[in-house]
Length: 234
Image (cartoon, rainbow, N blue to C red; front, side, top):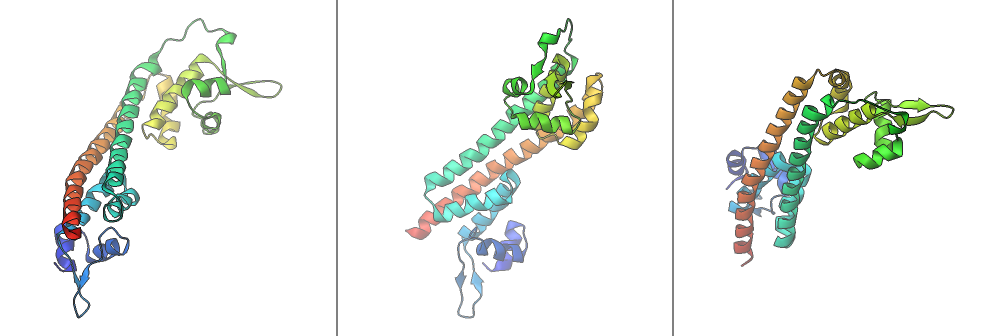
């Protein structure tokens, strides 16, 4: 195949095919006496694998995985692919927790609160499994603003503020950005805004599904690359 043939069948540009070869995603092409590139099936399979992986994992990790097919033991390639699937699984788990947070945490009744029920920044960070710097950042962004205890202005989180921190933590883990959270949190505190969060999380859910399907397609292409590479070596 010529460069243009690979580009057409892989759904990319001629320049991208050349760039992928330069970056080691495609193995070096055979050259004719006149210097023209000649590609085979392994190049086409590699291009298909990269394009699917780029959707599923991003272009940087996609290049790393396909390069490994040509340069590393098969066990390393499989480990990289397993890690990509595991990453999506973690995202699904975080997304499910975020959905639960929106449905349950924002409407939790908080009654009979005593001063002793408040938490320090280190206590709350430990309870959430985050760094204290994350809580300070959320404070600076106006997402979760604790009380300040004089004379040193020590942060103390009431149960309501701790609940807000749980919501922010789950939504951040699910990929929710700081800017929309800044607008959303006041609404959630008053029992409003849940529909916006549900819509955003549904979009996130669809994105994960698209990337997961792309990894499935990539696995088939990678299997073909591995088979072609074995044939080439033998």
